[in-house]
Length: 466
Image (tube, rainbow, N blue to C red):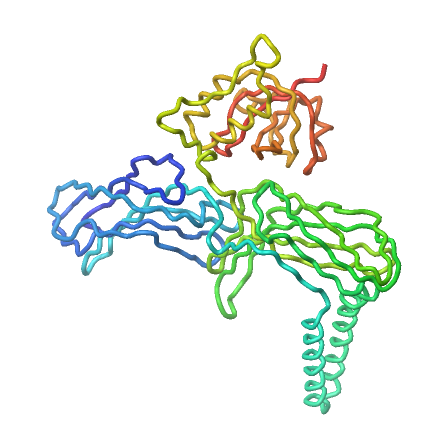
């Protein structure tokens, strides 16, 4: 039985922390019997939980006490520890990333009493490992040729080794024929029409809501009218558990989003053709992560649809990173300046506030509770014409705390500039209009009704159709 009990108490347990912040609090020790503590260690850090093997990282560690505790004592040891800027707190399907302050009393010849208290860390910018640089990939170049040479050399070796066993040799040859046919159809036949294809991204690093842009460069060998160029973005959690023969990979698709980038493109033989493309990255807080055996990874798959011929395909890894946190975005206020609030509609048209201006104020103050309260007091109940990009419909029904409609539902959306996340409360009469959503624009009038502090979204209620 432990001779002392530990409790970690944070000064501000509801606070959201960012890179460069410190987490403060105290460790309380309730002593049941006299005990010699070799070290009371307090540390901040992160760890993964879920299906994959556990990974962890320590940010800062201190030894708060070393000595003897007497029975009946209740002692408190204050601490201030650095907060890790990466990775952010994440609660997903197979993967969870938590930050915590852990306390441990090291006692000889006994189980060490431990205590822990979690705190939330939000992303405030890209990790240092995410380097922004253009990429270029030539499909079907010398690498593919080298792979083919190695493959056929391996087949020749197998043929020599297994020639004495016709059954095994037959199986190997059938496998080789199937693999060779697949490679020919998938990689060689598209090149017979398009020639060498270069896929060049402006940058493999993107923030949610921003475009992923690039170019496809073709050297066609024959004239053809391409049906389309499409793109599909896929985000996945990939967690590996166990090792050796017990190793198992768990995958969960977070999001799949497809778009047709271009249609009906005519290419001519001997003419180098460039096809620019742009793909809008949807809003997400699942940023690219690589924490030991636990990953969140994103990939952009480009496809050129060739009529009556195998399509050209290529996949590119995308590093999804959080937007850089700036003083304006963090809601930092100059102590010598007055707090800025949006203008309220006046008597003349030039005094009226627009939704563009309102969205800019909310976006700048989205991490400052006091400024948000001031903004809400100024504009709650005001109706604006607006244009937003619809992201996805939520599993919602009911009035959701008096904000929505009893017969309605909710939709996540974002304003374009700035990319302010929003929740649209839709009446039942407009259900059909929002039944099939997915990165399209909606125009209409809506009333500001509140702020979703959990997801940092402006809540607006659409008007019922007259």
